[in-house]
Length: 217
Figure (spheres, rainbow, N blue to C red):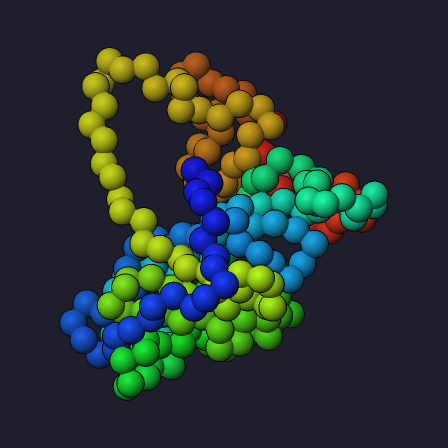
């Protein structure tokens, strides 16, 4: 669910050193309504760290939801080309921490050894602007020169719910046109009973935008 804006004009508190016990990221860290240097809006970004490690090398998965803007005719605020949804499939990266010793956290280089244009672009855009803050258990990312450039990715608590075996869970299935995650198992409920008959497919954006969005069709 999309939350309130995660960005502010002033840098948030960021303290701690990663050499302390359990001082590395673990789980999902999320930000909402993030400003970007591109012609689009990020309604939600998740970084998922499945394992906690004191090593400087770290593997994580990034999921981004949002939309691209209609450039012609221009509007203020800009209009989306499509309903906000997944901007491509989740991507897994291996990053690298640069640890400080002055109680100001660690810098996360998003891709330790970029091998393609996209990974090199990610490193060029974010550089050393992603900070891990062990004491606060959050990330702080400085994005461009917008009025609110400091964005916090907060830790998401995992909640487990007990469901009766006889309960009707059909309302949890998406409808046609809803965003979907192609890496999730049966994300469009095509194998449930009764089957939705939908598949998670990539639909290109309308020109002049470049890219696609995954929806149940």
